[in-house]
Amino acid sequence: MAAETFEAVVDFPMPPLPYTAILRILDGYVNTYLVIFVDINVLLIYKYGITVNEKDKNMAGVLNIMNKKIWEKCAEFHGHKCPGLAFGYRAAETAIDILGLGRSDDEEVVCISETDACSVDAIQCMLSCTAGKGNLLIKMTGKNAYSFFDRRSGKSIRILTKRFEKPAGNERNDFMEFILNAPSESLFIIGDVKHALPEKAKIYDSAVCSECGEPFRSDLATVREGCILCIDCSRS
Image 1 (spheres, rainbow, N blue to C red):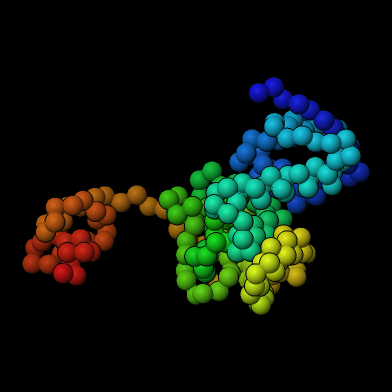
Image 2: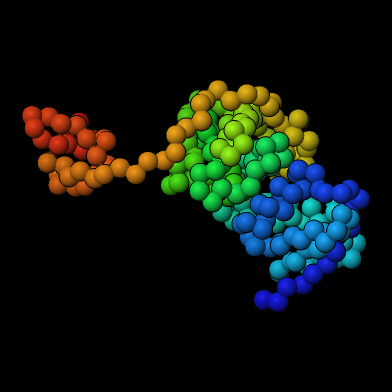
C-alpha cells in the first residue's frame, strides 16, 4: 500500500517521552506510523490505512488517533472491550510513559503481573511481554498490580490499581470510558517493585518419562528407584 504523508507541527524541540514512546509502540507493532524528525519543529509521519482529517493534523489529533488504534488492537487481541482490559491498557501506557518503554522484541521488557485477569492481555499486546518468551510472569496475589522492568536501563516500577466499585449494567461502558480517559494518578498507585528482576528465560534439555514415555523438561524430572518420572507419573 502506498504511504500517505502529512506533517504534524509541534512547538517543542523534541517530543517529550510519552509521545516518543507511543510512536515507537505503533511503529513496532502495527506498522501504522514511521516517524521522521524533519527539523526541530516538524514531525513527518507516514501513515498507512488511517484517515486523518484536516482538523486532526496537529500533535493532539495525531496522538488521539494513535491511542485509539492501540486500544482497538488490544480489544482485537483480547476478543472484546471491557473495564479490565482498559485497566491493563492504561497500566501499560503509564509504564511506557514513566520508563520510556517500547515493544519487547526479546526480553528487554519484563512484566510481573499479580493477576491473571483481562488486563494482562493489553500488556501482552502493547509491550509484547509474553509467557512464551519468558518476559511475562504471573505471581498471583489477587491484586491488580503490575511490575515492569527495563533490562536495558535497569529501571523498574510497580503499578497498583486503586479500588473501584464494580459497575453494573450500562454503567460498565461508562466506567470503561472513565478508565480510558482519566489521569493515571486517578487510577493507579505508583511505587517500587517488590520482586527482583527475573533471570532471562532458559532453554532446557528434554528427558523421557520411564512410565508414560512422553518427553518433558528435564529440570522437572523426579528420579525414583532409578526411573525418571514426569510430574504426572511422579504423583500417581
